[in-house]
Image 1 (cartoon, rainbow, N blue to C red):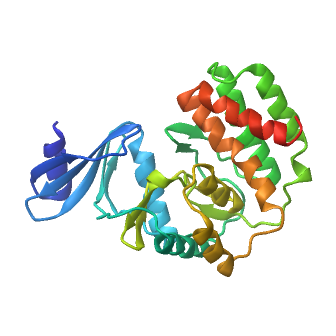
Image 2 (image 1 turned 45 degrees about the vertical axis):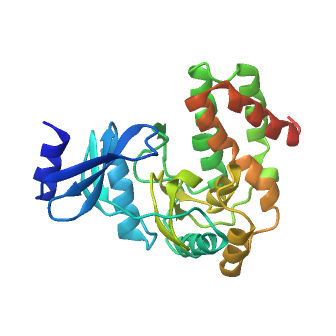
Length: 278
């Protein structure tokens, strides 16, 4: 069945125009204009039912702006089209800070999530645990390290250095945070801007975490800068030691990138390992 036929059946209106959109890393992304005047986004690929679930979970359990999901299946996701204009300015970063600070109010009984999720199309295990340190060590850092070695994307000797660092994480990471819902993939391409406001956050990789890991991720590729962190700190001051911990937390998204894109990111992993003496 064609995309236009499936969209018509799901949305109750025929497609009169189709336009390719940027941003489809693991799926084709298209803007569909319907006969009734609505614009929707169609993602065509695999594993999209889980993405639809995660967006709907954020919409149901938080006030984080995300596109409304109209239909989801393994190979098709239909959702609201969010108009965008411009790029992240100081004003829109402050708006983002308000949204992510508000997300701190959504807490859970344990770190992790009730089901496995994905990040960048890769499996993200979430077996729930009472200890943030243990969860991060086993289900983020070591899981992604072992998967990267298995795929022959990460040299075994680098994995051994990561394992040594993992044994020492209690020097820097404490257990003071409550399990907090996070978006989980906070890089620039997943933050949609409309003028001085955030139109929405897309492509989530949700679970309950120490929210510092989300803040750390936002620094890895320069998504947010001083304007964001200054505003965020007005809601929730950063705990002492964050500047050091963020490098530890960013090993996880870097290992994701090692698996997805290969050797270029191994060097970035090694820079952090040397910084922590392993």
